Image 1 (cartoon, rainbow, N blue to C red):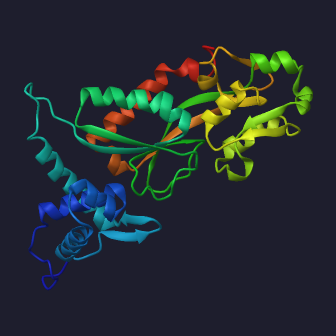
Image 2 (cartoon, rainbow, N blue to C red):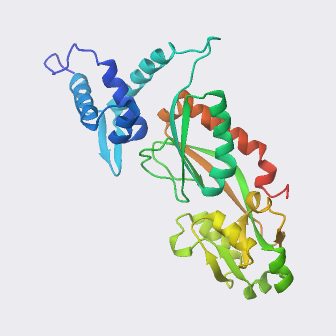
Length: 308
């Protein structure tokens, strides 16, 4: 920046840097405003002031929100140092740093209920000032993670400027209720599945390639009840709607479900966690990620259908 530049010789305001930090993490002015307790106009004004001081753009508009420029990422590092210094003043009576803030997580229905929820509950017991918002969705990883800190998706994601972590493998199996199998018999093999209806996702609404391919073992099976929610799959199968292609870690919890064709139908998929690199540096986000990784490790056998 030349001496004639508008902000030459001025230091960025710490408040402006903290505003940039909130926008950079969420990708949205509205989310940053909610987090900081100020209005959207103030966010815009502080970002403009910071850009004037630094002599360049710190944010660029993308689909669904905002993304950091190279200058913005440099400024974000300074903002993290400011935040760290402020938070270091907050400690419990034993001198341990107090973690606080809101962590926003998106994950599939089953993962949210049986893996994410127990993990974040453990975090919240240790750090009561951390709040976690869980949004359930079965979709591909977002290219712009506006408003989200963490995403858990099925299948290896192709992401831009983000960190993808393989969490764990899990298995789908074919299940029927004891009542349904008594009335309709147990399938003798793959070729026998043509006479059974399948309970699974709505084909036309399924956005995840790995889940879409999972049912290709028996293309002749007709659809029974289909849904975008895996809990509907489980309950429809328990209600004798047909054979359900279900995550083993969910189906094996129910004594009235029996896994059939265990060797012939064994679909192995993987959960991946996606987050921005700068978001992962937030201690409260790192604590949630660590707890999720620990939980999936503990549940490895259940995820693979080995405990059922």
